[in-house]
Length: 229
Image (cartoon, rainbow, N blue to C red; front, side, top):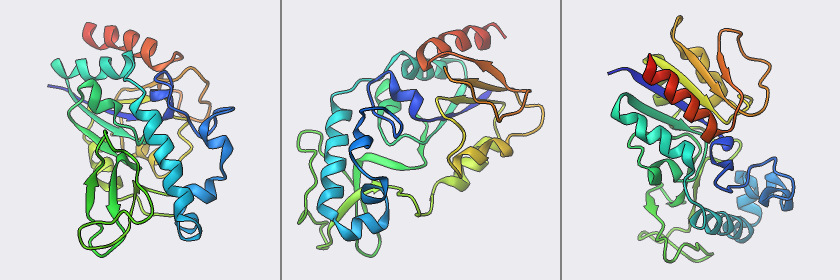
């Protein structure tokens, strides 16, 4: 069974109504990134950071996977599909994908600020995390998110996955955020690379097969190509 390794970014979940950094009028526009997505922001005002991610969690719980998410999950019938996502939502899993690596953390998880940094699931029925909410050892809980300036723990695993791909697929990412954007350099020579994005991504190799559509329509087209092959 051929192995398809998929790198997904914000454009993957845009059709589900998940705000991206660059959305005009979106959630991020009301905040400075340094205030809500950096270790310094957390140290300065943890209450603001927790409130911000509570809002993002609420938005996620009101959202549903789109046709692109479901199409990726359905490909598991015919391929070994492994997803590397820059997204912190759980829409891939909710659509049925079984092998998902989250490079930038997960919104529906929190972790301890104490030694060991244990990770805990957030209860969807009680999704807010507030100052004073502590792990069993008594340490404040923080979002399980990789903030700007923090290490990306899963990147080495993602590099190995990419190297072993028979087909590499990029969906909804500008390929400008590192280290994720560098994963394409781990693809073995001769491996087919597909890019699904409604916007032009100009700085990539001419060898890449581009489907200039959104995630849902693009995946519909790609599925026909892959299953015909």
